[in-house]
Length: 292
Image 1 (tube, helix red, strand yellow):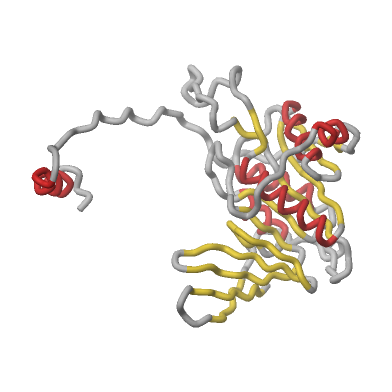
Image 2 (tube, helix red, strand yellow):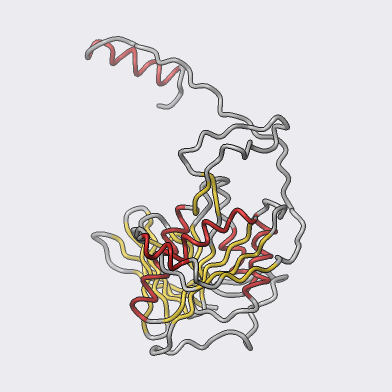
């Protein structure tokens, strides 16, 4: 697979080069019999993978086993990065026509998140329901890929990471398992002439990646501004189809050994006042903090 990259540096010339992407040798590529040859006037088939995560405003309490968190008082929401991805999928549908399907792997309590995604513009949903699936990026990616191999799609969207574990791996793993190209942390996504153009921000500029479809993308927070669902849309979402399945089982490759609170911050230290304190401050930063 070849993806053409265009590197735009502010104030400099443009550079063109090619990026060769090689899937894992052990990965079974996305079956050509199920893949879609995208045609410019065809309606898009978009799949957005979402997950439930603890609300970032929730105060997390470590369970007595020091390997998990107390779940009783935790409020759950759609992972914020996947809300950006979902909004992008809905905008692509509104512009090009087509269908948005949300796919999630999680327990029964994931249903409110699925219904919210349907209210925000998704047309239907697939719930791989499991109350004890391993919380492991590799196992989750393999289960999602196993389900996705049964579906046709043009655009596969993920958030760049989950705000709970910050693993930043599932989207990339799924694309490799399916044998399709993946552009990560995109802040802009456009579809034209059967190709996708994803823009990533880099230091001093941006990179625009041109990729043939089907392809996967992980969304950054600047990708879109998520909309709010009206009461009417929330009610209408209850009538949309949610297909419930059991995920294929895969073993976890990671084990949580322990969870710890971050160390308490040391108390602040006043060096002095005014310009007279600058020499002493520099000395402390150099000799004690060792940051300069």
